[in-house]
Image (cartoon, rainbow, N blue to C red; front, side, top):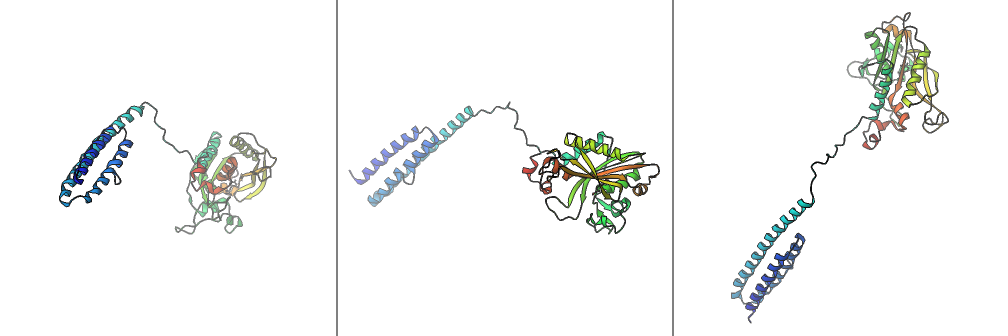
Amino acid sequence: MTEVAKLEQQLLEFEQTASKSFAEAQTLADIESVRQEFLGQKGALTNILRNLSQIDKQDRPRLGQTANSTKEKLESLYLKRKSFLDSQELKEKLKTEKIDVTLPARGKKIGHLHPLTQILSEIESIFLTMGFAPFEGPEIESEYYNFDALNFPPGHPSRDEHDTFYTDVDPSIILRTHMSNMQVRIMEKSPPPLRALYCGRVYRNEEVNARKEVIHHQAEGLLVDRNVSFGQLKGTLNEFIRLLFGKPLKTRFRPDFFPFTEPSAELDSECPFCNGSGCRTCGNRGWLELLGCGMVDPNVLRAGHIDPEIWNGFAFGMGVERLAMLKYGITDIRHFFISDIRFLEQF
Ligand code: DAH
């Protein structure tokens, strides 16, 4: 037998076995390995073609043509079988991976209120049940409402504790340093008797650390009526603390100084976490400093066009971050403002 005849014979046999193998492939993985075996770079056909160089030149084109048409035939066989197996696999998938359209939809992840907003609305709702009405006012404020009307004399050292930010608008226009800026604004608009609650953002030029931020929130209340007593202030705040911490707590009023209240006090409550025996939250003191309060200074009433001979009242103001930190055991005030989802998700 000549070399040519041998090769032709080989090609024929090759075509038969390869066709059979393609036809018998049962899966997509099968057919890929069959393709590698016969048509791949290291496959049987490549081997046969390599021997082409050993035959006579004049016979080569003919043989080459036969080899090519074998290759084409096999490739089309491959494609046909592959597309059959593809559709087979899809059918199988559709049969087994049924979708139950009646299942309830996967819920969308929804957010929730920021911990500060949560405690603010808790504070508000406690005082609203005691008849305090909500008020709002400007964050950009005049020195008059922030200081002068509140009996801070110009140049008084108590102004220094309220180092704030000045604006380009006017040297006397500042960012409010406390919610007490609302006291005289409210008195001017609402004749007594009045009960007001107002909460918001205040600004201080502070060096930021775990306990101090440039921005914080305050909640403040003001009550003006006839014959208001310090005892009523105490009763109101004791009730507030009972509702906020969920149990009655001992309190003490330590004398303090604020220009707009006389007398003034700092209110401490027994630490709700250790019941006064001393723990990390209260720094082993057994007491928590919660807020400032006092009886409204007659000068402030006068600034609000209210006659101090007839009316008197009390006021109290608290840092909302501080209360939230105590209530939830948060150790760094900066957590409230950096929007770290790992922190926020805990509330
Ligand atoms: N405004 C005061 C501050 O920011 C807190 C305060 C003290 C408010 C006594 C009051 C008050 O209403 O009576 O430090």
